[in-house]
Length: 148
Image (tube, rainbow, N blue to C red; front, side):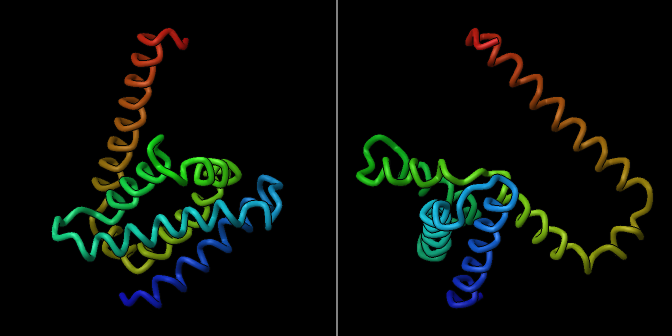
């Protein structure tokens, strides 16, 4: 995919995130734009770095690393990044992610149905196991740190 296409998709996503943040969480559209811009810039930098660095990691890994570096105490832009990102309710971007995921698998529904009931059962086990595993780990860590 060309960078121009990525930029267009980022802009559409940014508008969707800002709109979801405005409608769902009543954060002003202009108030959330710096946070959306920070998130989109970090995402775009992750995309560029994934094309430049010969290490074949997923783009998400590069985006995460860049986001961590931007918000770390040694970063000169730390305060702006954290302050801007705090105005974005992170369940707002999930709306866009869910929509993209639904669109991306819509053409594969017939293949999924051909797999039969076994795939549904496996999916239920995987989701349940992931949830329970996360809950157990969270409970253990929060108990050990005396948070709960």
